[in-house]
Image (cartoon, rainbow, N blue to C red; front, side):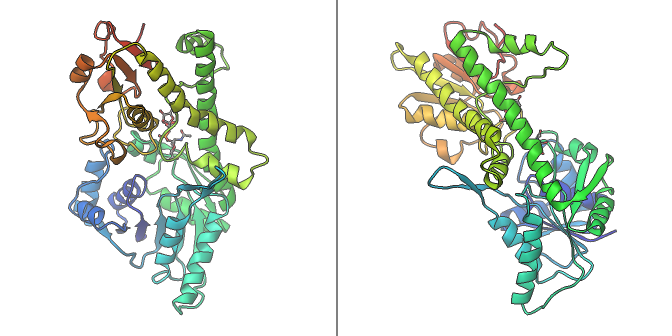
Length: 410
Ligand code: SAJ
């Protein structure tokens, strides 16, 4: 059993560290937040994901998972930290690799010959090479000189929030080493819990594969979102349209929504656009279409409030998608904030959170579904949470409904 040090105990690092620990690997989980370290060491979790609490508790109770603030020596280092982007003055997006760089440099004091360093964070092409350079540079700075024989690979995660634990085990994976040896050893390592196929490639192809998967989904959602805008103009029910078109054996249109949220699909295509701005025209347009959708919804809601004295608007759902508590990059939060900003009285219903995100505090009232339905004249369905599945047309009688998910059957 190889000892593993996982850097970053968030949505990817925590399940990964825990599953390795339950398979018998001694795991040192590292996070920069003392609060996160304390919560995990007590066998609890700081994020919501079905069954993650059970896995983490088992990992901690086995004695194999320990969280700390600094990396300790290990056979394998896995970097699983965020890779956001910065918005430049001209509107272009540049990848922000500061967390990856900082994690890589933090390995330098303890890295040793024969170690394997894996980058799991979704990253622009060439980042695994940079990780190697940062570690080597830091080793020189620390007067450790060149540590020979360290292996490097990119092994991107592919797990879907809400189904992470199942997908962690059952999704095929890619292991892309800077050398064939690094790919092979990475493959063997992930085989300790992954029951699906693990495909070997080089690091740059692995980096691009991960970006491509999310860009593919973004373009397909943009197609659905653009159709919804066209259908609004042409007064066609987009949900019925898609249902019918999807009866063609080779057509499979995704679902329109209020926009694309989360920390992956709304971010990753920009890494490709940044690397190849002239060529990535479709990808850029898809991002723009999806990013414009929240503003379209806001305009629809404002229109619906016309003629109502002292209108109250209820926003149903704040999460970035159904049945999760994750509000990061959520178009629903953006829409709710913009509506409040426009001067409307806005109620928010989000059964998965206990308090509003900072951007809505003091501007919007968090309430339950029954009270929102009683008080609001305009209902905006933003997330297709199961909790809203029981809504009936009778409950909505006399109200204006903007159903961005096509959830309410008319
Ligand atoms: N959405 C739509 N219409 C759809 C599908 C999704 O509007 O038909 C919206 C969702 O509401 C949400 C956003 O898109 O706002 C993204 O949701 P998602 O379920 O498509 O994806 P994520 O961001 O939760 O997870 C994605 C997954 N990637 C792909 O499916 C290609 C997951 O496998 C990745 O591991 C994850 O990104 C990641 O970490 O990169």
